[in-house]
Length: 165
Image (cartoon, rainbow, N blue to C red; front, side, top):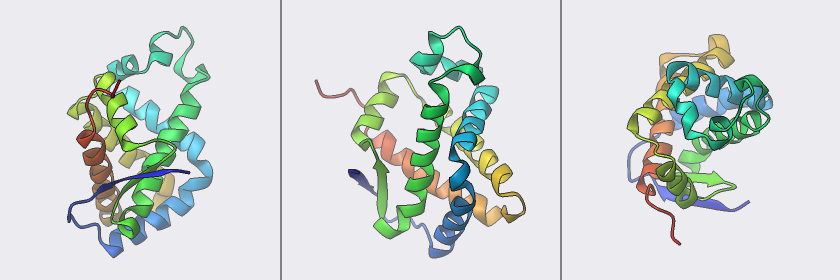
């Protein structure tokens, strides 16, 4: 799988934060499909208008939970987000699989994603992880995942411009 990178520019993601992210991801990984759906349902619960950002939801007449394209997309996004967090410190930069940061940035630009959307997604991600890991959750773990997510978002935002034609 091709990896694409964006340097984390000296902002720290500590060894302790990495350990918390890795530990919690090992608990969640096998359930990534369901957790990805929970993550997206939380986003849409907080910001129902976010559904309009997805063409496969905009043009759909079926309920969210029955949409055949939502679960694969949700799982892909959740996996990418979590795997990006897990490898952040080791590689010293944000890397994503199966896509490039340039493509991610162009897609987020094209569909009109704004700062508030990233904030809603961060809250939804942290809530999803909190529920998934149960008693393992702590303020430190929340901060670790928040820091990793912020690095990913900064990398995507750095590439938010029209795709090259």
